[in-house]
Length: 315
Ligand code: ATP
Ligand code: MG
Image 1 (spheres, rainbow, N blue to C red):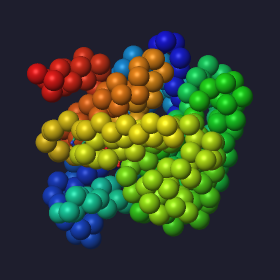
Image 2: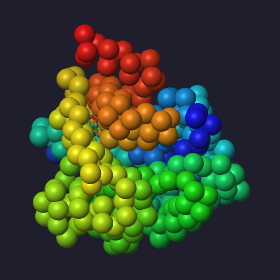
Image 3: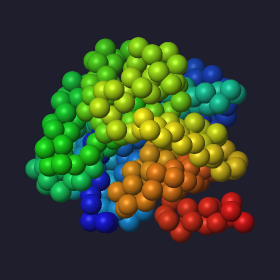
């Protein structure tokens, strides 16, 4: 089963985070970074750490921020051959600062960075030709070019009989990109597995209650929905079954990346033939270990670490 390859397409960034909590960046701050980041990059790194074949289609600049990412992904087992190194663009970045409430403010440089030049190269075609499952992050649908490339990838993988998952992963800073909302709605038509965080469940529906939103989304042809519920856990909905699995009790140090690790672990466990309940348990463990580490990609886990957390919880 580990030969089934998972592919994702989208942004590779560095993340630079403020050391102190507060509002935004309108004063000089002490910062920490660069950390390898970008939701699709975190996702695919977590897939590879579970021993599944994994590849990423993206674009970085020929600079330290780009190579930092490529080297980390490669070391963790991700096929980086389809990450284009652009000769005269700069790698994307995100500055993040946590508010006292736990909310985050971002300053993104994505659309006008190397990320914006992402396209499916020959190497990308080779990855897609072997792809059993494609994952799309809503945060990657930030321009017509990226939306177009994502669509091409989806169509190819579907034509081969592969499956598609979609995590809206929207940030308030991105919702004013006009083409993005239509692309997010389009993804609901395309995906087999939908993985929103709690409030995102109703972001793209007419329905205003969870129950009705689930019915509406399943009515579009989506076969399963996983709702990520932060420190509460996660639930599965497929029209016949509603299954809730509680989170692990851990200290939250940095929530960034939890959703990406959770999603990657759920998808990988399902591809490896595990049940919905087992896959949710592993995904919760993966999210819990992610929030325990500072830095977006620093909290990815292998099965040894996930099994240890699960065993400790059962004891
Ligand atoms: P992201 O900020 O990465 O986009 P998200 O909103 O997509 O995150 P969350 O619901 O915050 O996703 O987290 C994903 C999963 O990680 C949760 O379903 C849960 O299993 C786990 N998790 C998140 N926060 C905690 C926590 N404080 N304690 C334990 N587990 C957590
Ligand atoms: Mg998310």
